[in-house]
Image 1: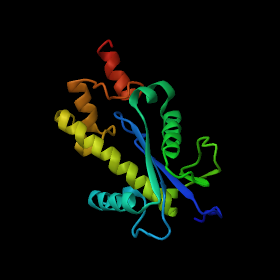
Image 2: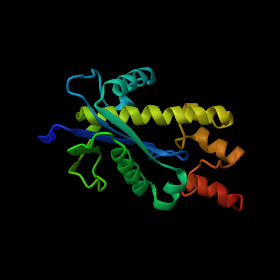
Image 3: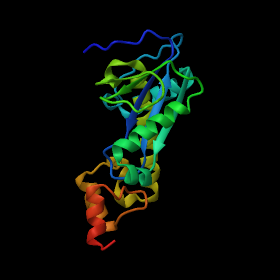
Image 4: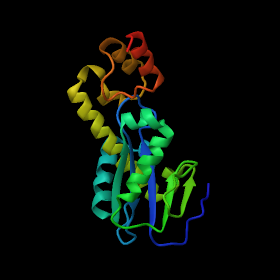
Length: 198
């Protein structure tokens, strides 16, 4: 698959992690790479081991021209829906960059209104190094948050399933209840709350 790379210098890649989980924020990252400091091995974060993602995240933070994170919290996801919350988190990431990009490339099939030129790239996390870098930063950041949540609530198993609706997670919600960090608008969480009369 080919994509048409914009003929500008400052290209920002944007990606998100956490649209599917039942708990926690949706986390986005925006990255402008420095062409004089190439980073080997950038690809879709899901194709990397956790150890390699962490190594690359440190290289990205050290060598990128600039990078920033954005997020939308569970209450915002419940209020806006996950798509609009993700778009909001992407805008927040780009707005937080210390250097304004000339063009924004977003993984997927749609872009938020950045008030900047932008393109959506299907499988961008595989095709565009800036998007690959953003996917790695977002994934490492959100996974770290799930490890912290696991320490606080080990009975839910967040370190293993990262908040996704696995059988183990659904069983834990049924047994131990809904946490404040859960997304109440998501069907499996809503069903438990309804069963409890909440």
